[in-house]
Length: 237
Length: 237
DNA sequence: ACAAAAGTGTTATTTGTACACCCATGC
DNA sequence: GCATGGGTGTACAAATAACACTTTTGT
Image (cartoon, rainbow over all chains, first blue to last red):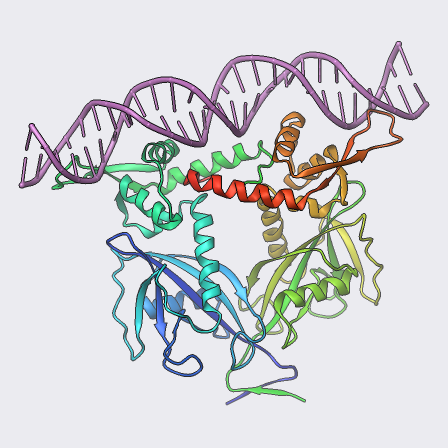
């Protein structure tokens, strides 16, 4: 069966930039190797066509689950890419989403089909198909910007984590070292963590273990918002 | 002539949220009244189909110029809306853009065709067609957030303006009063304005007239970015 | 001289930044 | 008792917030 329209229509796809943090604190991205032309054998962002009665975010979640078997993770629309010749097969508009998952609690299933699926460290990506390098860069920039003002970093960590772990995560995402004292002061002052225990069996002073307290975070956000209201403008860029 | 595809495809449109600041410092949005069903006679955001060989932003700029006659203005992709039943005629995915124009220097041409085109104050909008109310709210929220950390406010003002004017603009966008002393200190400390003259013929102390110095702004951004790098995280929300 | 709106001085308080230091654990 | 990494004290500099004040113009 085919479908006929009076005017030509573009194809619409969703692509997913799936970030994961592995056990050794490396930030990685999931890519799949293309089985067909164009860009046969190149690595690409997972993605696929939007089904007619499916919401865009639902399509992204479906792709995500198909590739990783993971549900209920942080996902957010990134940007829509629609330059006319970005796909040699014709006009394809892609709505990109990025997702954050923690690889500790969501071990990603092996590739179920013939295609090759693999996690790559973000600074060791292969050459990508289509304009996927641009899409990836848009995503990593968004992640870096967003992590500064919203606690999305917690999405990448296990439910329970230590402050040194959190600090290393931030250092990894931002690509820079942070001052331990000041990092801790700032994070703890927000009061959005609750202590749930202590590390055991380590050959040094055991770290406190925390979990993210979503309720306290909501309260914190609310207070911050009211406070911001008075500041006006800062042009922090 | 018609176009046939193996699988069904959605229509793709762009919609524009066009913000303007009028002479009396009111923030307004341009709407058009629909001539046909569905939502006949309702007001809606200007928009239209994406032409096959046209970039998304180009489509938005084209719509903008068709409705306002204005070129070379600030425009930015906002979000892509694609809930399956947002348009009763079928699956329509819309990529929304928002634009900022100053009505002083770009007097908007009268509606050239039968359709009714009108500027509405942002807190006095009529009932909107489709999900345009949601799109509008997304846009105003983005504008409010963005104006705090990037000087996009300047896009709404004439090239030359006074600090009280700039402050009133911020107060309008943010919907709150700002402290004059602190607002001025903050803005001037950035060093991104250059004085170009004095007000004349007013029956009070004449205000200094400034223009936005894009070069100084770039330098300011660069310095700020380097500075931010050290801070790590703030969760300002 | 007055009204009106622009523009300034100053200060207490809160945040940011930097650096040195102490503490708990396993071996 | 030593190595290792977790955790803390503190002090100077800078940014913020608040309030009252002075200046310049036209009438």
